[in-house]
Image (cartoon, rainbow, N blue to C red):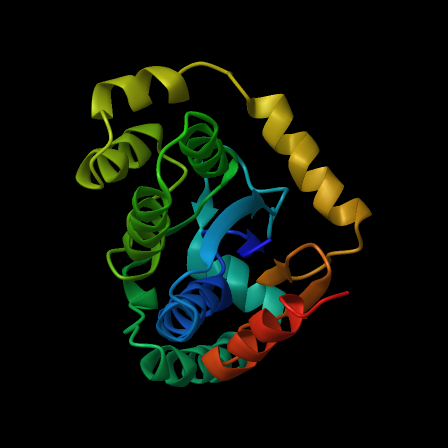
Length: 220
C-alpha cells in the first residue's frame, strides 16, 4: 500500500504543537519531493492541555506564572519557545494573549471539518489559522464567534460553522476521543503516529519526522 497515514495529537493552545505542525509541514514537503507517488493522509486528534479551563477562559499570564513558578521562570520558558519558534518560522506574540482558552469548541471545529470530508489542504489551513489566531494575534479561541471567524477566513462557511458551534453536536464524541488518547498513554503533545506503527513525541525537527516516515513505510 503506497500510502502514509499520520495521526497528530495536539492542542491549539500548545505552543510546541504549533512548532511541531510547522516541522511536520516541512517534513511533508521533503517527503513529497522524495516520494511523489505516495498518498499522504493526516488526521488530527484532540488533546486537552488544560482540561479544567473555564468555558469563558481565565487570565493567561497569571495562570502560567503560577504553573511554572513565577514571572522569571515563565520568561525563561517563553525565551526557549521563542527561539524554537523562530527556527520553525514562527514569531510568537505571547504578550497579545489575554485569556487561557477552553479548547473543546476548537477541537469540535477541527472534528467537524474532518468529519464532513473537508480536504487535507483545507484542514491544514484551518489548523494553521487556529494556531495563528492564538499565538500570533492573541485572539480568544474559547469564543465561538472567534472560531467561526477563523473558519470563515480559512474558506469555510462562517454562518454554518457558527450554527454548529452554538449547538452541542459532537461534544461528547470529542471528549471521548481525547480520553482515548489518554488511555493510549499519550500524556504530552505534540504526538505523531506514522502508519499506526511508529510514534514520535514532541516538536522534533523535520529531519527526525522524515526519518520516522521512511521507517514507517518499510515492510513490517
